[in-house]
Length: 94
Image (cartoon, rainbow, N blue to C red; front, side):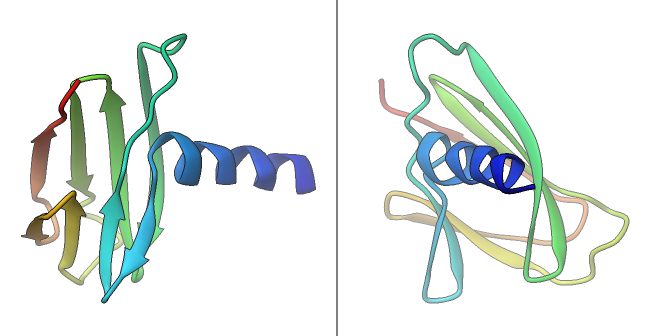
């Protein structure tokens, strides 16, 4: 269990760069050059989110099932509010 938790922590915090600031789920992605893309699901404020990351974009989709809250997400200074069922894409600087 500890190894699995460490792996998830590495993916979420190091590669996707997730952190929380002022009740906003923030991303500062740093995908290693050896990986072309990364995709995983996570929960934030009891709302399931599917995260897809490539070197030039971050896509977030709030699952329609299992969640009932809207969430605020951000990349750099760009903050967006998403409701259940919404999807958004952030273009990343190379």
